[in-house]
Image (spheres, each protein chain N blue to C red):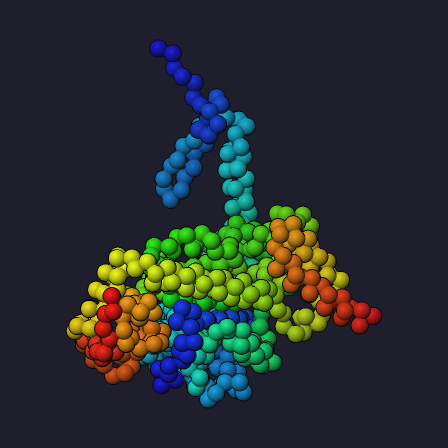
Length: 339
Length: 165
């Protein structure tokens, strides 16, 4: 699973961290996963596995059964693709390749979900890459399609393009400056916005913007609207940062200074607390309130501080909070407050 | 002491019907007037629900239920109208494709990609007709980005149609 530990974050933009495309497909003439008999599950599983491993566009594809995958590797997969793996049942599996940013999930609620994560933006190239993979698969497998409803999925709300396109944005100035509500109001109706925590919880000030409609709209429009929205939000975050830099609001200075202190001297940090403070300190670096913060590291850290990554690095499960704070302390060792 | 006449729960007219609804063992009672629109709505919903619950997919035998996933691709054909209604009710279709705005045969809700063989076998005039409807709707709702894309799609199809002729 070394592929999933690769640092795919190129960090060309410290606000727009990455984009992910998910395509959902079902094999024609077979019931959806939940309604399948064990024999049908075995047949379709074998069919999909064989086809995926045959794809020339994947670099050294590898298959893992979810049954055999250890807890830390399951977590690592979830952290990489920022998605939830289904509850373990028989006949579910994943395929990954050497790039570390592609994965296929066999037999969640649909027969197949294809994932492609990209950190280089704009991400139209990543979408084309995923489309090429799907096209190659189509030459081997016939997917369920209906002229009125498009590509068919178990959940009818996902049918049509059966495409989920999501952008991951780091918006500390808008969130900590309490401007998120205003931002949500100005977003077009074609997108939804959420965080990675519970409802309305934006852990590490990370915001996900996703296409609302999967049907009644084509793939190009989905992409165009999403990318346009992301660009607008990035501009809003930039201008909010600029405003903060000029006005030096004492509440923000206090928050960032405290976060910096905590990161420099911590010995035990839980994931959520770590991400919250790393996010603030990263903003501090961008506002030049903290000196000598590594230029681009938030998106890498966002991944490397999490449970699955630390466990797969061989860290002791009982000492993860210590390991996390050790990494952070070493990164902030040379930094100092400038306000 | 004069007793106040019982009023309709919803519109305050004189009530003449007692409507009881039993859900999960809980009884809810409504006093309603004879012409109450809420009564009509409740009765038609009941009828609708009964019809829906009797719908079964001929292939996987799944009964239609608004709140659960479908059973197989054939369910989409078996429950075509109910699925379209569900998508509309749950706000899963953009406004330009709101089926209530288009009183005609089931419109093609899907305007995205299709497998190559399907793309090549769906009759072009039918596709063009649906795209023109979508274009009119997009323009009416001032969704010019969608309209531009639909126009491009129409242009490509017309060129292909012309080429085939």
